[in-house]
Amino acid sequence: MAPIRYEEAGYSLTPMVVRGIVGYEAHPNFAFEGMFGFGIVDGTLRASGYTLKGTVDSTIGLFVRPKVDVSPDFQIYGRLGFAKSSVTGSVIGFSRALSSSDSDLVYGVGAAFRLSPTLSIVGDYMTYYNKDGVTAGGFSVGLRTQF
Image (cartoon, rainbow, N blue to C red; front, side, top):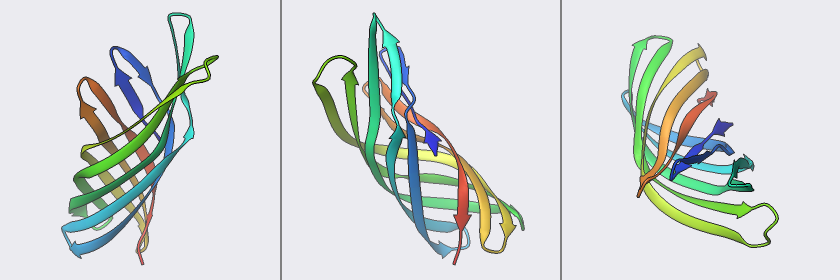
């Protein structure tokens, strides 16, 4: 699970997203990845007497991941690519919801600690969207398995 902080016009929401990433290691220092994610917990915000709710319907991305093994059990990496995300927002008490979908350059950094030859704990910070005064990004912690 990853909390994604969405900020616009001085307000912020933090919906929770589950994401899965699959990849192909093309070189010991370079991999290709694909990502799919969806919201599991809505973000809420109270402003001007109203409660706003926002959720991530889906996010899909393709990345390159340059990486360096700092030690046999510790790796640092970057991630660069493009993602398309769909979000829905609504005001509690009003029947109409607003949906939006857009794509943007995605980038981030992370680290992995190897627990066994096939299992690692990973953590990263990703910026998923940064256009026209709107930003979305956050930290994620998870497990990586190799086969």
